[in-house]
Length: 528
Image (tube, rainbow, N blue to C red; front, side, top):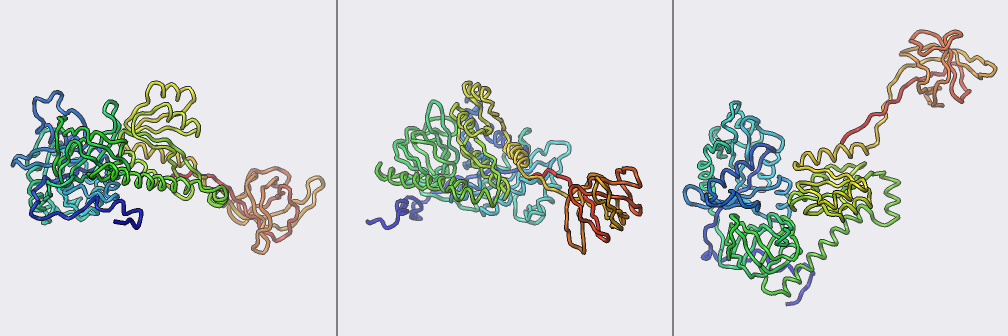
């Protein structure tokens, strides 16, 4: 086999066709989406706690971002907790078709909100069936009907209104109808008839990845086809490794993981990105070949992105001259790769021709001294999402005066950055017309120069305002009024219909018949 193009390295890693005879039913994979504070996480926790073995100390051992539970009918369901829709879409953009069903959580007391609509768009774009969970049904001001009618505006017709979307009224805190929700998910899964071949090398998608202090890089992987065994050689994105251990969502070590099973994989050389696809390869040489190619691609992409901002010196000069685009540099640290992607995506979306956020460094994990050093070198703030600075970094930041801002809601973070970036927008200047005056005749006054005797035709004329001198509809001078007199006295302003004397700052060439236009300039601070 000869390699023709560099990309042929990827050949044969994914999507080899399966023999229909070898397919076995698999559990549905469900993503929970919805507006912030509508109870996504509490719903997931309730579903889990109903399933978590009572003997497990402290309830939930760890957050691996995905859980498998058993529905009352005995069928299994895998839930994915996404860190926001942006991350969900970022995964989809990388070709990761992870989800089979989307559960849209809407609070009955709040109704359809902007992010609910966003979630609907994402689910529709991914072409997956939606099940609506109307949450907080136990609240006194809960109006489930309102939610159903509001969903109609976004082309989601629930069954009670003659549509085909299943809706379930639930309460996560009071544990109402949780079983019914699981049943509906199972019914939907039966219609979809989900199958996969468990007896082949595993393929899957990285849902989340983080750097664990004791265990090294840990990736939460959803196995999609085949079975992953301890000891397999795997590649995901630009990282590879041999599977040292597999940890189930309950925190127990397991030997293998079949289709639709979420599992933590230990043994990677570095942390892969969320949304990277995982594949088992036959030998180390193949693993290195694939990851080297991908690492190189990733480097080139990053370099291209950086040069897009910097480029050669001439480009920089040209850009500075023409665009005058201001950049707002940041260092961002987040707890997991998914959130980081979502944050960077949201910041990129805010960029305009005049101002753009520029991420100097983005990483997963706590804030270290090196982050502070980098921020200090460039004089930029550090944005922390769900992570904290260690003691040395905190002291170092206090010493050099670098601001570290902590957030736990992506939307707050983006709003704050937006406000800061608005400060970089050049203010707009707005002119307010005050009035016009016509010159009747010119008086020469010794020591003062020419003074125009005028009549104010409309509006008012103020001393110190900006003026334009207009002759035959052409502006011949712009400047300020130095003097404004009524008879012998100085006047602050002269109203329409009155006569007055005007002198310009440093300009003498006025003629009878000219029109003087008087205006004020205001600066208005803009926001994104």
